[in-house]
Length: 301
Image (cartoon, rainbow, N blue to C red):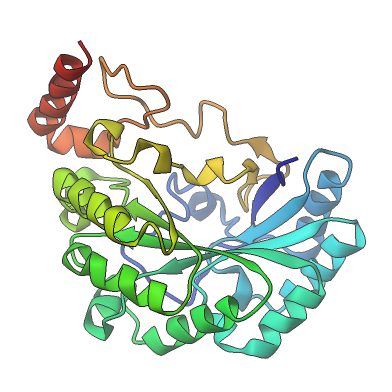
């Protein structure tokens, strides 16, 4: 039976300043002031998971590992018979003791973000100079008996080095990787500048799966399936058994397969389970987007 996970966003605060971050995409937390949960608030939500079909509570944010109570929350989760997961930028896992402590408290799944093997690109994307922390965190996680899913976010600034980055992870003995085209969230004009060309992104993803697919499990999301040579490798984040989610300003979990989390399919698309094209990409590049859809309709017919 699949391990059912619930994503609990306990904090919107973070030690990085990534330009692609959409931690509070609707600004509700910012407007209400509810950008983090207290320890007791988080424990109430976790306790509610005990009598459900949830197996693993995944702490997310923001960056959950910077919280002083992360060990306490993990221990509480384990005391209820639940596993712990974290969605993290991996920088705090440079400290092996923290990783070991959380594993002793039930941590069995890590969703860790990777940006680049190159310091200049890393700094441009995260607006920090802490690439050595990210790399050390990856190294420590790979060396442990914990499931690690690495998420490589593809932007305009790292797309040309994508093969180098994947090769770096393969050389480090990473087992599972997700390649995700950055989502142009929010105001189109303010975010579209970091979004790579969608056809170029698809080409790079296809090349990486062709080249490294026998050495590492590679999944992808963010591009329409009509541009992929490896449709079976498509998997959205929520498809990794993330069945529930809770924001810092919410007091209960909601299902991730509701209307609030769906990405609209391209109009006229006939491919099953295709995520379509991000709405803001479509707004900015309507002609290009519709060309992709029309081409797909012709091929399918």
